[in-house]
Amino acid sequence: MVQVKRICCIGAGYVGGPTCSVIAQMCPDVTVTVVDVNEDRIRAWNSECLPIFEPGLQEVVESCRGVNLFFSTDIDTAVKDADLVFISVNTPTKTFGIGKGRAADLKYIEACARRIADVSSGCKIVVEKSTVPVRAAESIRRIFNANTKSSLNFQVLSNPEFLAEGTAIADLKSPDRVLIGGDETPEGQRAIEALRAVYERWVPRNKIITTNTWSSELSKLAANAFLAQRISSINSISALCEVTGADVEEVAHAIGTDQRIGSRFLKASVGFGGSCFQKDVLNLVYLCEALNLPEVARYWQQVIEINDYQRRRFSSRIIGCLFNTVTDKKIALLGFAFKKNTGDTRESSSIYISRYLMDEGARLHIYDPKVKREQMIQDLSQPTLTNAEDPSRVSRLVTVTTDPYDACEDAHAIVICTEWDMFKELDYERIYKAMLKPAFIFDGRRILDDLHDQLQHIGFQVETIGKRVSQRSAFAATNDVSKPDHLPPAKKTKV
Image (cartoon, rainbow, N blue to C red; front, top):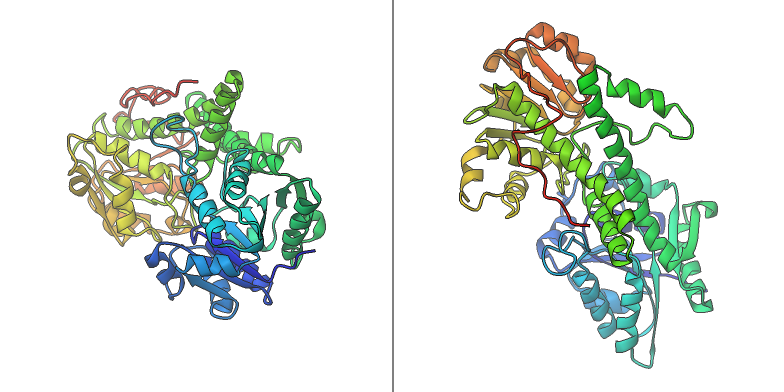
């Protein structure tokens, strides 16, 4: 069996950095080098201020950085010296051409494969760690076969990550499973065993699943699609709860106690975000279309449609409650990351809610404890979100604050978009006194459920997801919030 002593990871992002840091800590006799073309990112990994926030990551990195964990921009040397190369680069959804808006863009994967083939010699195990469409390993293998020297031998494996941001280090150290897919040839099986041996240093053997390459790739897409489906399912029920008087938390608890269903991922909210769920579901939709399975494609497309609907519906509720206009009104938006305990904003519902409110002329004052101002402005200035006729609107309508109390001062409403624990501990009496009246709180994450009576006693008008908090007062919105007429409908994807 091949013994892995040197590992190279191409891509120092949310997957490559934490994954290889944990491998280095758990395998002190293995040299792990994480490489990236982004010099600023590598500089940050080598500093005291890491480029990503993840609980426990700083301690893991500091325990082995400079010992057997290295971060570098010298890609060629790291690849040349490695026994095993992880490919952990971005695979964004295509923004133009065939498959626009659904298919994964594999240009970075292809570039990595060509570079590996160009600088390598001897035997090399190449592992796709990025989320990729089914049969992507075959594409990598074809590039290798077309560019391989006589002295070079590649084995391509699929080893998808199943990390949840915010708990990534715990997930890596104690995973539900590790999935490795490879060829069913003797050479492929030896490569699988080599990678399995790395994980067996801390993961029980019965938690390491081996499959063929295609099953491994599809399992990753299917896992994220199933999780996204559960969130959209409970969010659809939340809309029904709001117009019937039911409480979606009580409904979720009732159905979650059924062992066949379980309680995980039944938390109603403003919608799912993050780098994987939407991208992977859209990738699955495109795959089904390409394989002439239109009914299956439409089924999974609806998961995305409900997520978009939930964001629009919540935004419409804000506008409706504020007398059907938010033009030139200050609104405090608390939380910009797509969930707590991470600084990742990719596909965050906060971005879309901000966009809808800016479309109505609201002045947003945004606070998040871990997201930098530059990231917020960049996200809100995306061409797909910014009004082309008014490119200056983000700088005019958005203020990023470093204090939640400053964000709320003189605001008409507070909108909670991320479930940071600190938002439960704020001094809401102080906040209420500084706000314009009537003062509204829109809890998009159901984190203030235990405080509703207290908040109403203070004077707040409280609105939340999937529940009528109290009888609405005369000045509250009377329109049917389940039908967000204020906002343009989501763009339909033809399937």
